[in-house]
Length: 236
Image 1: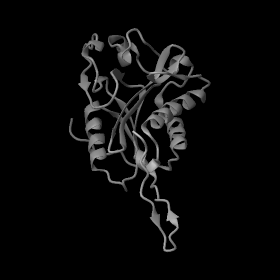
Image 2 (image 1 turned 45 degrees about the vertical axis):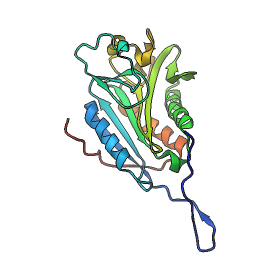
Image 3 (image 1 turned 60 degrees about the horizontal axis):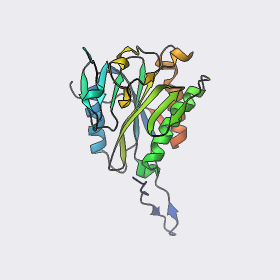
Image 4 (image 1 turned 180 degrees about the horizontal axis):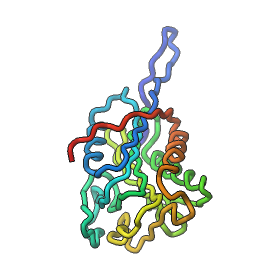
């Protein structure tokens, strides 16, 4: 999907006036179960207009496996007591749990004049730049979205774009129990190794990483970010 230019107004002399982009609202939801947050970002995306400010939602989820639209059940090996939820993002299966930053950029790509491939690249770059601030060298892999340190994945990406607006987003392993990843084929790859920042000499929790990640994402997308209260969530 290519970026679509937003309408441009004109002043009385006929000169073009670029539409004003409102500040993006940053909402930290704390720790939450997965499904109410998913339903809330669906509702936000469905209700937004061309004038709705973009939002960035930060959350840590209760333990959950999520399986994308084209996800294959055979990649869920031994879920045990952890629930498996089929969702409307791209990609296969991944795990969310405490100690992982999940960031949902709810962005109007048409207004930002950014195509989907470039959006994915910039989101990955925000994680790469964040890791570099802790002297951790990370990279992309062709054909396998996400961010890797050596042979191990540290950041996953699963997105959905509806009417030019994004929802779902990234999962960034900071300081978490990685055992549940052994119960699945992460992102559909059998035997894929997974790592986290704390295992690479990084911080012992997400709080130190959140503002750095948001800063890099805001820079890469040219966003002016302001803090806002957490959204109301539907009953679980």
